[in-house]
Amino acid sequence: MNIKNSNYEAYYHGLMSATGLREKDIEKPVIGIVNSWTEANPGHKPLRELANSVKEGVWAAGGTPVEFNVPAPCDGIAQLRGMNYVLMQRDLIATSIEAMVRSHQFDGLVFLGSCDKIVPGMLMAAASLDLPTIFLTGGSMVPYNDGTKTYATPDLKELIGKWNSGKITTEKFNELKNNICNSCGTCSMYGTANTMGVFAEVIGICPIGSTTELFCSAEKQRQARNAGERIIYLVENNITARQFITKESIENGIMHISATGGSTNAAIHTIAIAKTAGIDLTLADFDEIQSRVPVIAKWKPSSELNLYDYNQLGGVPVTLYSIRDFLNEKCLMVMGGTIGDVIKETKSVGEEKSIRTVNNPLHENGCYSVLYGNLAPNGAIVKKSGVDPEMFLHVGPAVVFDSEEEVMNSLINSRIKPGDVLVIRYEGPKGGPGMRELSIPAAMLVGMGLHTSVAMITDGRFSGATRGPCVGHISPEAWDEGPIACLKDGDIITIDLNENKINVNLTDEELEERKKNIKLPKKNLSRLLKVYRELVGPTEEGALWLFKE
Image (cartoon, rainbow, N blue to C red; front, side, top):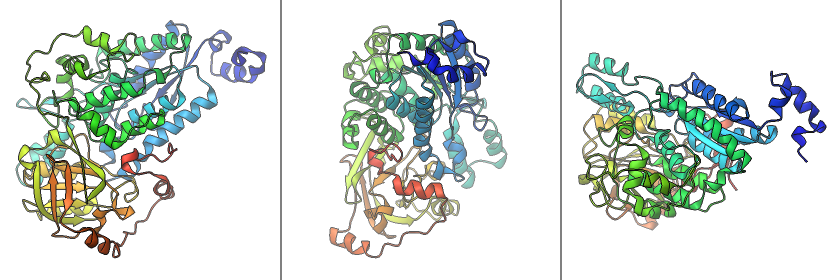
């Protein structure tokens, strides 16, 4: 029985009519427009206008759009202020969407999102709900050019280090600070936001070209109207999210992330998305999948090419074409056809410098190194493609810090020496709590010219905007008495990206003895952070807390 269109649902009809909808509107497929629009950051501000275009498409195709909103934190704005609260919001976003959708029983969903935690949170919700679903990103910022160079957001972080070390004047620093973020849209780099946006395209649930297109382009409006029309077709034919989010499509997505030099945070998020969809995916699986492909392209911060450059070079179809021999071409695409059809319609990349063929790659065997050893028994990760080859093997003394603030103070006061290994602990999911992103100290190293002589390791995480020898996600974390909690200044640490190892020259017996003297730092925590610390799982399992099995 169609309850929605029966007299049993008179209360539903009455309440919906109060919103201005007519009886015939209510009887059509009701499409939830899940929008992360906010004025609080530039990544999401364009989504109000985009939602209007989606609604036009829904109306035109015979549906009724109903919009609701979800939280939309910006990692960049949260730096040093509220970063403890950002990763947790991925699960909050997913659960808030699921609760709203299950209570209101929408027939289909169009997700509008941008930025680091919103895209994976929405994908988790889509996987869990398994309704007819289309995803659309907000589009990219307009890059800034000062007449000599084109800049994007990660350049600003590195400029902090340059200014601090006297390599740039205050006047020039202020000019760039006020102009680098040149418009609304996602930051014009291959950080976590765009890595996961492109991932959504590759797995098939998001229209190809959604992420790399400028937020202000007419093409974004066309994409939105097309998505609004298409969702009605998906509803009428019961084509649901898990027909796109499959084991095979996720493998395609991971390989493409690796081949294009994506963010290390992709490991956390793809594992979380897979688990939510009922697909078993471990960190070891992620590593094996990503290492199948060579790196054929790199974007800011690992090169001078920004996200709009990627778009102008042909965008996702071109990079898919380059690695086509590794992909499962039968995976479905939400706008119709298969990923194989996208590849067939794409021209060869030839031997372009910017996007290589697999026969002339930038790096072999993927862009990441997943490291193991007595310092990270459960794993750690580094973006190998963003590390200078001379730092693939680094041996040096530990300089230990118990927070991001401590290491930044040392960098500001130039207390770091070439050869050091900076250890930042108690920044993991539990220790933070919240697994803060340590992108500013990492960028400061680059700006100070230390990224070719100093390494940084942490149980926290780094940004997709990070380059240099920055090893994150060390597990077990310090709060769980992982080996990183046992380190002291002067301990010799070996980081070997060639052998995928990270070790400290201490015996198992010495580490066990030091465990007896671990003193957990005391922090004043909000009730929310206390609950999060109690519930959150380990990094290598996706750092889930509300979606844990």
